[in-house]
Image 1 (cartoon, rainbow, N blue to C red):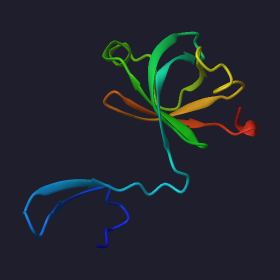
Image 2: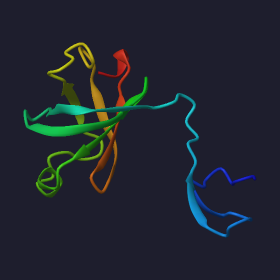
Image 3: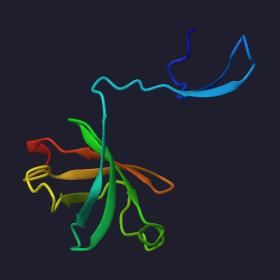
Length: 117
């Protein structure tokens, strides 16, 4: 089955039993790994926001924010942030990130290269 490059999800019907399934297409070059755990997001203004990790790759991280943090507009697209992980201090050590997108509670965070700081 072919799918246009802009398509992220498609409903597909089984030809035998006629059930519908939604398929999500992952078109990333570098794969994401599922990662769960709690961490702290530190903004440039010094605000600390509790986050839940959902996935991680060499280029960035997917996290979930609480409704309270979203309503208070703790983070915005384009904000530079740091991540602190108490259960694995080396996971984000010395790295800086930028908020790439926000969709509901899900936030995509892109890792900045050393020259982008």
